[in-house]
Image (cartoon, rainbow, N blue to C red; front, side, top):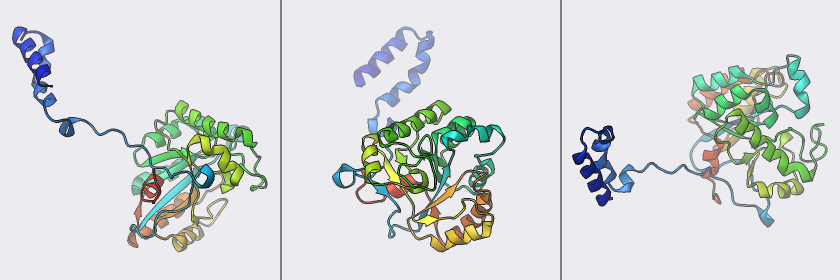
Length: 281
């Protein structure tokens, strides 16, 4: 490093009129120890170690003893065959909810389907590039990974991993720069075979311990009460970012957030909760 600094200084002495020497004042910085000048390497999102028999690990909530933290999560659902409904005017997005979270300065994790990112690429990109949020995987098609799951169509076991990878490809195409290695099963339905099928994908499956009840709800106050009654330190709350299927969520959030803050809770993303959980890698 010292030899390099001397070379730069000599070059500038020989050709002070050259424009290249305008960088000469920066040379002393290069001689400093790397620890004081090198930018920190990007941190890898925390994930859980594989479960028994190497199966995909499942995360439901964070530690109950690491402070009053809570993660609000929002499923941006859109099933692969709902394109005609979107074309006819049905809204599967909820920009006012995202705007409310920004106004309230609430970090959140958005579990997005690939089909949703295709339908709303500008919104997907905006959410994915906002440091307040993190984007995680909710499958491409929003087809169930087990049978008998809320009447959802099903994806075959041999296509499960491909469905997840298809979603990540859709995020990249929309301009989401860094989708998290977290996956939420459509409907929350999974079994051992589904966990086995996703093991090669290297994701952590994220469930929840608080059901908001916002899906198809018409009473925002009831949704808020259900969340407020259920939250404990380390909780993961499942809500929705889908205007047509969860029209009261924004109003509920505007009640939930100030009340939980008044109770001493701090809002975090799922990645922070996973990072404080023993067994992380």
